[in-house]
Length: 550
Image (tube, rainbow, N blue to C red; front, side):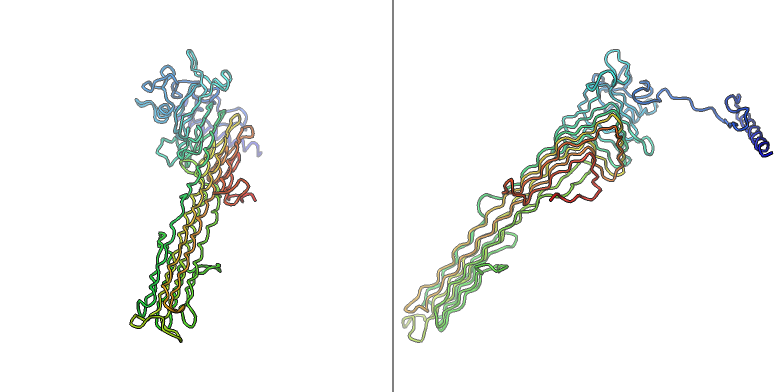
């Protein structure tokens, strides 16, 4: 009973279908229904007919209605048909994306002869590039992969720049619908060495944000990256030296002889080294000098302290100023660098820091004109003791060297945010040699500190003389710079992109570049050395940066 009821239901559907077909003018129901109850079909329209352009790139017919044709021997003034191909790939891509004109629909396919095309191309997602076509005299533009061998690839090898850029939805390009994908087939893409916009990296193909592409039976080959330039050395001559301190006035020239004025070395950016004032010469006691500036940090042997003025004992000379601190070698470059629309940007080594300024010497103490036994000065002359000399100022710190530049990367395919790349069987995606990082620049020697001024001459007693100022301290040596990052060697470098690689595809890196040495470092000295580049068949730049090797 249940089977009979089900069949009655299907008979009702059959009747309704026949009415519907009759209303729409159908001429028959052949192929739509079966005599068996369980095989009832509703066919309101005939199935779509296959297009003559359907099929894979190795087997589909090469027809004018299916694509635009391009040959080394073509002419860009021609319409891009089989009999009148255009000359350049980019012109063919433009015709395929927008149509040949006269209302013709866009074919979104390019057929390219085997041969060399020395040009850069931009390919909108949704436009296919099918290369390795047989188009010699009498050729039928069929796929030549099984006949001509590897030399019959369509070779895209410009002398400079990035050979292939696949455009995404954010680019000003014609896109064939949402999630449209370009197929690159039978093509060898070869980047020149160091041909990216930074003049150092070599990148064969970039997928812009949102772009989608399939690489099938093709080769994507990066060239070598260029070694990074060494960082600029700081000047080979010493930084500015200090200034000799001023001499103090002699005894008996004034009842209160003012101490010698300080001298100053200006080292730029508001940094100065100042010798201390000399102590005043007085009647009953000499004045103390002033300490040199800037005050030193830590506990150096010399601290630029002031000399003591004469009292019951003669005066003291000012102390020599502390030397400026030598800057240490700066750190070498670390990190993965950045992917962007122009490719990859690496990391320079840190610049060396400036050496510390030498402290000025302390000012010498002043003398006194009278002691318990006698006056130092003759009657009728001023009775003051001699003034102390001011301290000499210290030398400026040396400039630091400039960090070494990064070595250029070698990356076959760069896939940016939201893009999707699929590498299918039979394809090769190969990185080459990354450039070595540049060595860091060397620092500059600090300037010399100079002598303090002489104290004033004595008259009759030792306590009347003035004391000399201390030497200014030597400026510290500028720091050597760090070495640059070595260039990566990657098959694919991605940033928040989808990457799919067939197990029968070949995706391999070459050798990464070494990190640059720190400035003034021997081969065995690793302080300040930049990190070596990364070697990987696929490296995700959105993943955490790995720890550097220890």
